[in-house]
Image 1 (cartoon, rainbow, N blue to C red):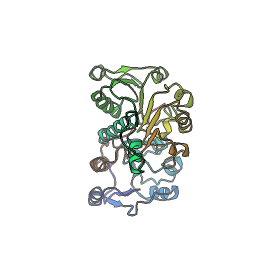
Image 2: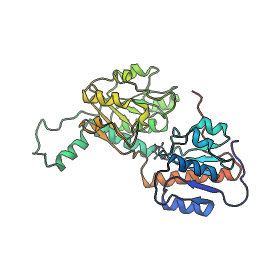
Image 3: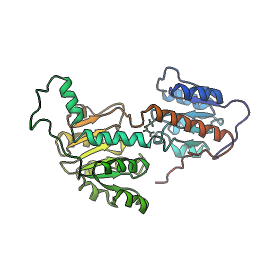
Image 4: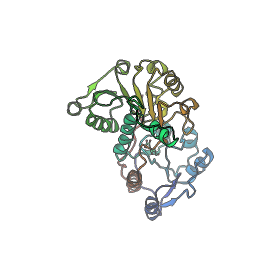
Length: 333
Ligand code: 8YV
């Protein structure tokens, strides 16, 4: 079932996390919205209880909507309208088999996430966070010709893994900083985009990895991309190169990355996401050549409001009996 008119009366919509006030207020006007006032993370049991009673669940990346949770859903659950773009926290196959539609919020966090990726691309080679820490700790003794030397951005090769909306938005920014654009994607992007970005497509990820100065991970986390950057692949990266990840931690073997960074076999990394977040490999915490962010890629007020709008539009369209605009189609790979 792709869409379905729900019975009369307000639809019970359960939000698993606190959303911005204006989004929640609008949801209360339109739906029988059940809020999570203290913003605690739902346990698996709480998720099961929620899907047993609500018509629509609005989860976020912090919820694990696995087959067990889907199995606990009552027949009244028709829609999972996720607040976010990535859908790797939802078992799409189980949802499809249970006749539950899934939607997400693509497009509205592209520019914000690209900004954070670009910030990391600049921060790591230019040692921005390290410099800030030095000044605050009182360790700065004054300017020196050889002090805090990093590496130039201009003229470097950027290898983007996953050339979707966010990958392309990063490429546009990086061009402004004088970088040349390379990418690995399931298929080449449209020739017009390739031309605009003067981008080089690499069929073979290994070939690209071994030639880039900075690598940015921007593919979604799917079965096909799980640990795509395995130890073997990470070992292909040049010693002077940097790695940035604003996608999902699970795309990289984090233990291998931490070890290679410690051994300086990769020069540095900028990470916004982690394999077992919010837990972070302790090795990474001690490394100066790493910038660690708390998954803030899309964390702007404007972005969160737009994400909320998208969720509301998806839910309302579905209630009205139409296919919601951001219906997620399960990828068969
Ligand atoms: C969101 C994200 O904040 O949308 C995504 O895929 O990674 C984040 O930027 C998060 O998913 C909200 O659920």
